[in-house]
Amino acid sequence: MGFKKILSQLNVIGHCKKQGLPFRQCPQLLFLIMGIVIMISAVVTYALGTRVAADPQTVLLIVLALTVVLFVITFSITRSLEGLAEANRLKSEFISIVSHQLRSPLSNLKWALEFLMSGRLSKIVGKQAEYLKILKDNTARMGELVSDLLTVSRIEQGRLPLKKAEFSLQDLAKEIISEFELQASTANVAVKLEASENFPKILADRSRIKWVAENFLDNAIRYIKEKGEVVVKIVKKNNSLVFSVKDSGVGIPKEDQKHIFQKFFRSKNVLKYQTQGSGLGLYIAKSIIERSKGKIGFKSQENKGSTFYFTIPIK
Amino acid sequence: MLSALDGQKGLELAKGEKPDLILLDLVLPKMHGFEVLKSLKEDEITKDIPIIVLTNLEAMGDVEKALELGATTYLVKASYSLEEVVQKIKKALGE
Image (cartoon, rainbow over all chains, first blue to last red; front, side, top):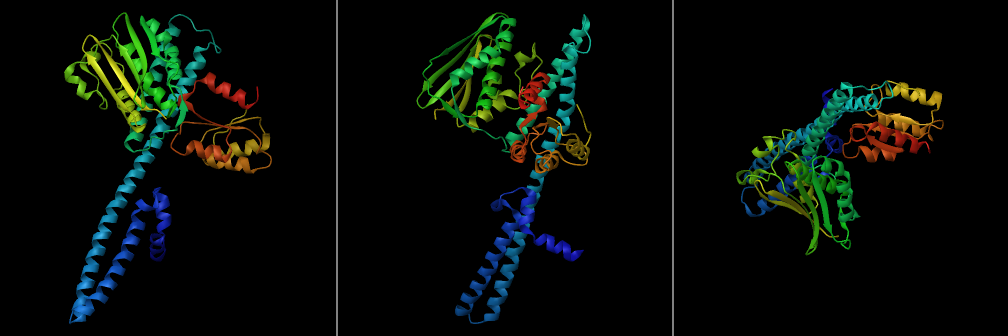
């Protein structure tokens, strides 16, 4: 059994593949390479040392001592790297397990509710519709929170893939304004688009950029207390397109502005009357835009409104 | 409509009944969905049956792996309504 264990330890390539690491980051392979480098250096140092030193045995002892020290240091470093790599692998596995285990019951709830509310099973009457809607809305809210938490984990792990393709930012703006039409009219908010038709296309992950734009528009509509207006604008600035969403809402207090892109942060004036929201949206938006080589920012005045914007380089 | 509660039974059912379409989850008891998918696509009887992977897994590489193994579509349950899934099924059946 001991012999088998030793052999399995020597299967460096196997270990690297198991950890899911590229070879240049694999601790076992790095230890092997460093070991070979140390041994070659020891031999060369001994050969050179015996030419200049009177006593070859002293040279040999010094070289051996240094070689042992270097091996011990290298071994310690690669063991730590192994620990880090394993922790990273467990974290990815945890995310994968959580994503499945939390989402599975939520998906089942969501679909069962959809089926009940469709009326195919039996007619929905009176208060039943109201309570079913409460269940549906809260299930959707939990689902969004799980998705946001997963996205945050992936961002922190550097595992947020971006599938880039060319698309028109104006067309995307029109699409999301249409999607938010009902929400806006229910909230008594007029949404208008100011954008030329002739802007060049951008190269980015359309679904991720759409997510950011939707986040801006959703916040803008939500944080308008009564009647108001939201202006979605696209302009060209140097080699980038600037997408902005301006609202006439509650604005952000000055002391809260420096925290606005932090995880889980929600400014106090918003918490007063709008308790829903994870505080993750702008953190995720910032990560997406920065990964897309763009910039994100805002201007805001309490009780006057805010303008959130991002820039994306033109292809 | 037929259903199986684990990958092994699902594979046997598919080979025995030759359905028009298969909805395949990935995290299954006894046999993982990817193994089931691979076996279905390697078997002469079942290789042409359209398979929709319906799961909540969406790690990097899951979608690509499923499509490489021959899945027709990959749907993340959390992202689709029941109605949308039905539309995808109809599309896969050519309706």
